[in-house]
Image (cartoon, rainbow, N blue to C red; front, side, top):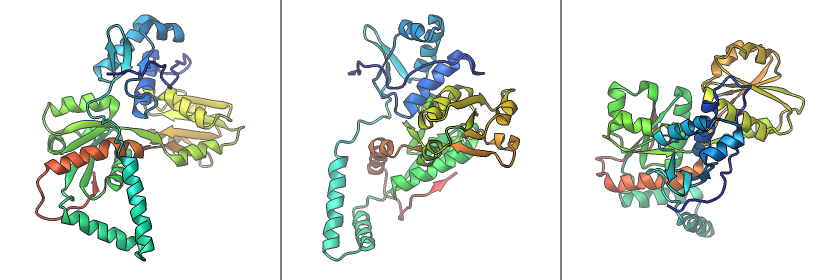
Length: 341
């Protein structure tokens, strides 16, 4: 390993006024940083003593945070070197050939246009060539998430980006038992959040597919909505998960830096109604949509949604699918890529 000897790009901090333990705040920030790529693989983290001094925390608290993250295989400590974000087995090295492939495709499009061929005709010709090479073998990809609607949405995005060589199915950890667990164990590739990858491997008990992680980014529409808020808005932030609240607040403040009044709480905290009553805008995390039942009809509210990172899919998931395609037997008939729940 060649760790990057620079501080992580994600600033870490704790807020003692939030209804969330300091341990959960710090674990959640690092997990989210890894899940969104703001803490890259092999980035160096501060030492226990450095982080404890920086945040005015007990070294025991920071040590327990690092222990929890090591147990989830998100970080690793190298004796004499420090603590680093782990490179997970499912994280492929970025595909350095992709820019050349993209340029070749662009040139092919220009050549077809000069020849008088429409793009639909080019697409049909390309599909025929792929079929002639038997490159459409179906690969079964399973995404295991947390919330039903969001996981299904992520699955549809994956199906669109992975193309006609796969079938994308989705489920949640809550449903991961019985026939559903058996279906996941028969998949060619399983995907989940970085911080739950170890848990999924444990649930599969060493059988079944390769398990790798998916990276996420806030949706562009969410970033735009935050950027256009009035600077005089009183913004209330409601998180479904306590550990996500500090990072959620940071995200809102970073995209709406012109707004001075941004406060947050957790969905089941006793101060939710008070926050709603003193807010002009409510922004809620995925899974916290129950807060909508507590809002007056004229209060502006929207979900802080994420999408799978398209660059991560291209550089890390597509190569996994291609590897599974090469290893899989040719099916008796042509398969198409679909998304099922």
